[in-house]
Image 1 (cartoon, rainbow, N blue to C red):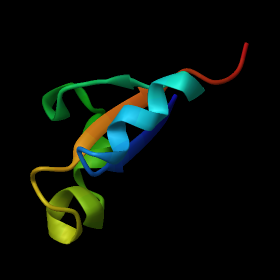
Image 2 (image 1 turned 60 degrees about the horizontal axis):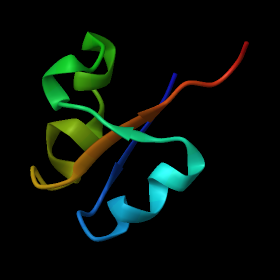
Image 3 (image 1 turned 180 degrees about the horizontal axis):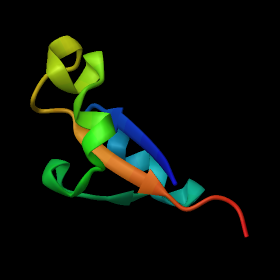
Image 4 (image 1 turned 120 degrees about the horizontal axis):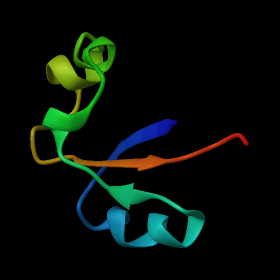
Length: 54
């Protein structure tokens, strides 16, 4: 799985690349320890994911 954080305006561009919106609470626990989710990115950042691999 590939995750990204982006601004609300840029989020409109990512579905064409296979990304879907997800709630922050659904992220794996190890991602909640990242600097981005601990404050480097604003709380308003949109969380998206894309399945990669077979």
